[in-house]
Image 1 (tube, one colour):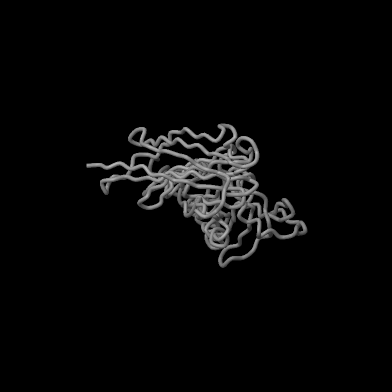
Image 2 (cartoon, rainbow, N blue to C red; image 1 turned 60 degrees about the vertical axis):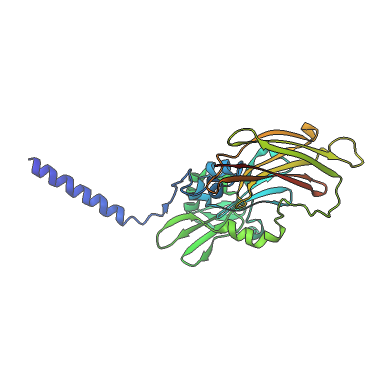
Length: 313
């Protein structure tokens, strides 16, 4: 009796395995990896607050590695990931890091609605429902944005551009995935307009920055900075922002980034900056602290920097 029952169980398992192998339904890859594997966390994930954004939206599995930035692009500070771009609004820095709509320049006129149950009509474009399922797994339309065009073929894939991400479906593996290089492609085509946080020494400005930085512990830098405005208006202009970054002098790796409104503190910054435990493999750790002033009316106005270092026996 036991042998007969065992044989029935084996037969059922084989049938289930066969059905699984030959199931033609599209496979949606929803696995995420919130923790980067190997290497410096800042290099893989970017500096805070981009790092928190990266972790919130699936980490390296979804957005890829941090590849460039921070840089000024219009009224935002951008952090470039392989598959997407994060932005910090200089108008509303309190919002933190959000997706930058990298596919705006791919927008096409609205298309007629196709009468097909496999498609969802949204924002003037027909979206395959297998993409809709994947979008829900990512957290909804707020993550990917609305579609900007119709689906198109790209080798073995058919793809569709959304405001923030590009989704593709591989017709051989039947898997939905995020285009893993769309963020890098955006940066490559817009690099000339992505301004580094440096102001030319010869540029005239109504702003002056005085700053000091020193160690406040083994992994914390104490920054004190005052930004003076010598323009015609009284006080610190309401549209002025301070952009602070800390980076390694050895490899340029940005460890900390912050954008704040200057008018709230009358141009004064007194902050402790956590940079993690320094790499002392070469016997010395040296970091550069840079403070820049940006105005909505005139763009980047002034930048100053200083360095802190510590020798280890």
